[in-house]
Image 1 (cartoon, one colour):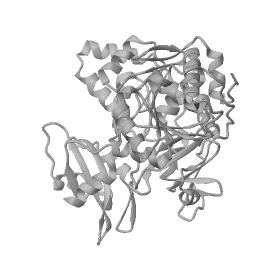
Image 2: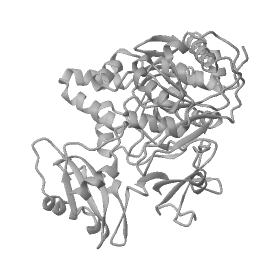
Image 3: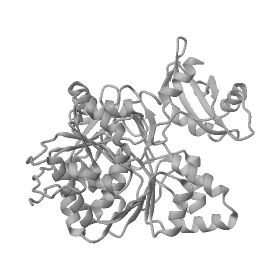
Image 4: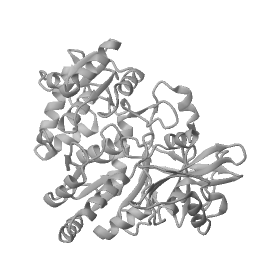
Length: 499
């Protein structure tokens, strides 16, 4: 059997009999992952020498099979296109068709759904139960410059786009985080994040497997189960999104005092806890710090760039800030003409380096417009203060232009969360003929609390500049969210427009 040149595979051969993955389907070593992924690869090849970057869309439950199929696609020379298990058929079909996938791989649990989609468009459908027991055969050598994966953006500003990363991009992203966050083979991480998103795929699973560490994958996020795992396992790392931390806090607060003390104490054995994929409210960070005694590490990244900024592994972490550049990543802030801005002045974040993606799949013009002299325009606005980056929000959704002022929705949200009646909030700009955009706040109230717009405005005027005070308010039971729990602000804006 030919040796693959994919660095991730080569490193796994050195870890052999160490535990790689623990999941509902069992406990598996690196040797088992190598052997099983080789079977998947030969099953996909069907006697051919190389898939030559054919796209392979796949959907499996969270666990060992996911990693085995992903690695098998890579080892066969294909491009992995992970699907989301909670997406409706129409969204799955969109990703399969847009990526031009010629093979669709599915666990028997998803057989009827995926088989019908594949047959409708004339693609090959393969069951994981068949691939996992294929006969081993020769595998191609894979150059690191090849396309490896297509991940689809959340589509908050239109149809989701396929973000193409090469094996070299993935290697650079992982090396940056291994160095910054001190990963080693002694680490043990609990995985609760979606496996169709860069946070779960790269930051957790791939970093863990690259380091020779142990990764325990839960079938879904459940706060009580996570707390129990904190108690039972010798975990060293945990990464999650703000919504997860909110639910963990709720579960902790619902526990009796003696159990709270036990849970807090057991969390202190973890060397690092990370939050990302959405802004972490300072109130949540401070509550979690009061529970476990340490500050969550915050970072900034996106599908196109991997991770770019991070609070320090050691040293003081400033609440509300995402730290400095990660190793191997260049970051700068620019104005609307592309000229760099000085510290203290907001600007759009640009990223350059080997972690940045190759292209938007079959969208050459959008790819071209997204780069300037090798710098990628992120569409996010930030500012450097106290030698740290602070994220002000998306240029398209979190920067509100009202009455000639540019206002950060995230800044207003942080303030509104300190109101005693407000549990959560989402601030958006809604088009207005007089002001350009009006500042509008959707809120979830604390239990048994009431709040009128006049009361909110009176309170806000004492704490915010007049043009930042919301002029409209909606009270909701919950917010529309994406699979990561991140609020989808275009849907919030639509609610205001309907009202």
